[in-house]
Every structure is written in C-alpha cells, then in structure tokens.
Image 1 (cartoon, rainbow, N blue to C red):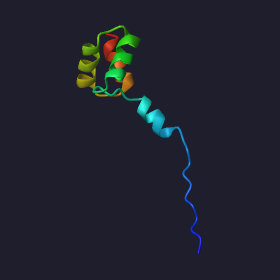
Image 2 (image 1 turned 60 degrees about the horizontal axis):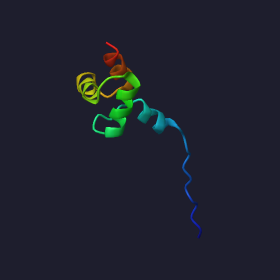
Image 3 (image 1 turned 135 degrees about the horizontal axis):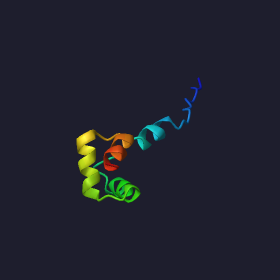
Image 4 (image 1 turned 120 degrees about the vertical axis):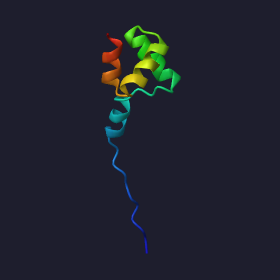
Length: 64
C-alpha cells in the first residue's frame, strides 16, 4: 500500500515574523541595525535589553 507524501505549504509568515525581531545576540543583526540607525552596536544592544527585541520598539528607542 502506497503512502501519500505530505506536502508542506511554503508561506512567508515565518520570515515576516523573523524580520520583525532584532536578535541582540547576533552580531550581523546588531551591526545592520546600528548602521541603519547611525548608532553604535552597544546602543542597539542596550535598546534591545531595555525595550525587547521587537524591531519597531528598538528603532523608536534608538531614534531618541
């Protein structure tokens, strides 16, 4: 008896959720955000620690 192969649907949901976060422990993500906002990497890390890893909140904090 042949078993049916389960197919998975490819969606952008996971990627969009990932893009909405800033990984404070990832050097490339911190560097990207620092370059984007014109702030230092340590300022980005402090902002992530203070307001969480949501990209909008981090950018808002860095804009101050």
